[in-house]
Length: 138
Image (cartoon, rainbow, N blue to C red):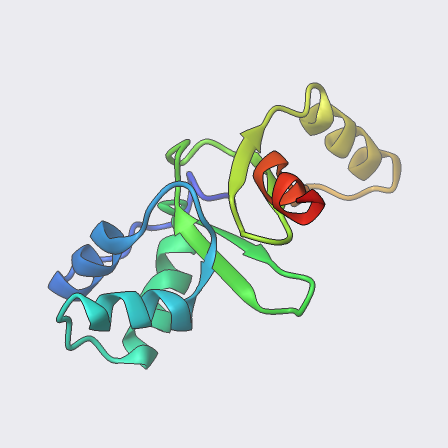
């Protein structure tokens, strides 16, 4: 099942508050988003933030990537429910959505070659963004 097929989570007041707090430019951990919410006066608990982000990611409303540390990072989804991929800065977390031409067909062909169906995949490229590279060179 892909994000477009996943059932949409019920939009509770807490989920709406969490979704509204997320921005498009930076991936952050659930704990970091919780800290941001708390600094803005929210009383939402950390466990609620974790559950809501996971559910919103499953429905495609939030992007989720796994950092080198193994921690899941989240941001508001720019592309809606459309399947997409990211290039993320390992230093600051800034990310851009990237087009990977023909990858969907490639993944399906590899699956068929090995007798698999309903192929799901994740592509995430990481690097150092121009701003972080400039700061490191300064």
